[in-house]
Length: 277
Image 1 (spheres, rainbow, N blue to C red):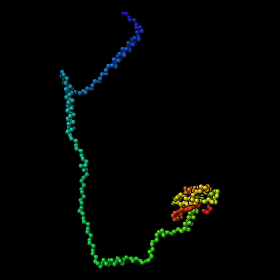
Image 2: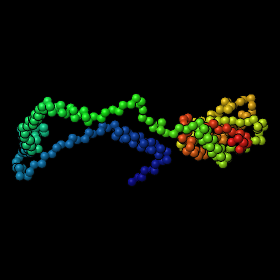
Image 3: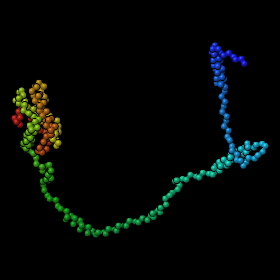
Image 4: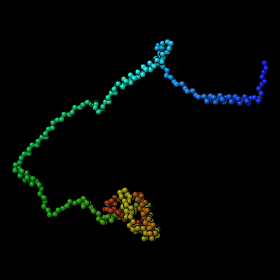
């Protein structure tokens, strides 16, 4: 037996390309083939073994059709029975009363009000006697030419004279000046220029809470002089002293609230403490 000579190296590339070509044809053929559709699912009917009879021809199809027909007839009968039974009528809640009937109260016949007995008739003589008795009982008014009016509560109250008001006002001013000194609201300003002629008067009024009931009003001079710097500075110091003591709170004597309206006091400020105060 003669052996074939071994393949040469020059034939290997052609064999490789041939293999690739055949493989590409196989892959293209597989991709171009149509995909098979899945088989439809068939409903299977199970037939009891007792109904199966051995024969040359099968009759399982007829038995399955008969069983399906029987099932359809049974479902139709159930639907007809459900439709034949009527639904119970709705119960009207308003037509049923669960409360027991109550006995109506018996109405008693109305009684006529008792008639008043007729007043006894008086004779003419008895009526005259009653009139005379009433005249005798009435007091006789006292004869007087002068009529005196009743004294009012305001007239009975003691009136304050002008002298009493001045004396009481002076006492209240002394108490206020002492509070200006004790609370260090006002200091000695006698070292100011032209101190002898500097003075300022403020009108003040107090409330029950120990505070000013109105803003202090400059009375003398009537306004701050713009062309007099020393006096203007002095007035500013006096205003500052009043506001400082007002923040602390004044001790207002009870005699102040007994003064007649309006309860205003004119407080005069001088440079030197104790001079004419």
